Image (tube, rainbow, N blue to C red; front, side):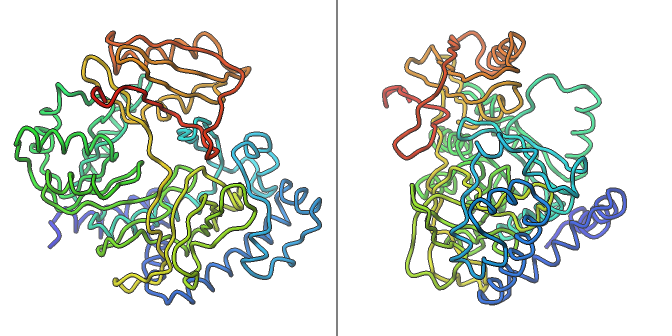
Amino acid sequence: MAGWYETAFRHVLYPIYESGLRRRRTLAYLNEYRRNQWLAPEQIAALQWERLQRLLEHCEREVPFYQRRWRELGITSADIRNLDDYAQLPVLTKADIRAHADELTADSWRDRLQFKATGGSTGEPLRFGFTRESNDRRTAVMWRGYEWAGSRMGRRTLFLWGGAVGEPTRAHQFKDRLYNAAFARRVLNSFSMTEANMSSFADAIDAYRPDVIVAYVGPLVRLAQWLIATGRRIYRPQTIIGAAEALHEFQRQIIEQAFGCPAYNTYGCREFMLIAAECEQRDGLHVNADHLLVELRKPGSAASSHADDPHAAGTCTGEVVITDLFNYGMPFVRYVNGDVATATSSTCGCGRGLPLLRRVDGRVLDAIRTPAGHILPGEFFPHMLKDVAGLERFQVVQRRLDQLELVMVRGPGFDESSLAYIRREVAKVVGDSIELRCEFVDDIPLTPSGKLRVTVSQLPSSVA
């Protein structure tokens, strides 16, 4: 049964804030997506196809990049009659976006877009634009997916998340505190976690008594291992949601043993927010197919299997290729986000018509350790480096416990202040227990699978 604040927030405070003050349509979209999830798979596929056709017609009409690229290939939107035709369109890469950002902007949306930067989980930070409707819909899809795991707006939630980098102003800090208090949230900075201060994180959870914990998987697992090893009993939340990294079954078991509640897996990326999430059955991750089109492409192949296709036989594994069906301002059509996943044709016992991913395989980042006991999740460096001007690619390698190597490909905007910022932000977290060696190179080689590992730990297993 919902508490009084959760009920008041959901039915009064949030609608006033979101619809009244901010004039967003998040709640209307959320109600739409809640209805959509119970459609039959065939109905969801038809809805998705209708939305895809509208987007492709818009791209042909208003987006110079697709106009030029499709014209060179002799393709028009009218030629795309089904998903097989659609899968013949060229994929969109991060390099394409960086090189052609202006061309990717729709003519009618110039100077009206909002912008974000990715954390560069493949080592290549990316800036992209999106429309207000697209952002509202992404928020609605996030709320729907988190609801499946028992996380509802206004429910008491603790985030074990990445902390702010740089020097936030007092006004910004006050705004964050007010916002989190209104949303019944508390945020703990996972980047400050060390072996020596684990008890402070446990104490904070006990003091806040959250119904829900949302956390980076890596720090959450390390805290769970510490709880088990020390025999520390902790306040039991109702549910835990893992994010930012793939949640493997062995990790789920550790978390559930330590916290005494179910743990749920989610899959998302900054370019699209929530892509897929587990429902109460926890038998795969439902793809948000009424909002996105997700394909799985064999590495090096032009052909894709459609993770959205409920009639695909068995399972298939491949590179994740995504189209946001509602970002008309800067459309990403068949965008390769650098992840690998496995889809299944199985249906879920929950009754939702949304298709399933069996697992997400390609987001495991190495953790970095220091002699002082700091354990930095792989997300720390992408999070910290995403806004550094002129930084094109990077990789962090740890061969010794007391030393980190930061290899960087720099562009024209990178200068001494950029380097000073990096050293200052790393020192905030690791102190003087570790030496940061910075090296500039012309290129960083990819792995055999075609990805750039952002953080690479070569420490012996006895240390790591």
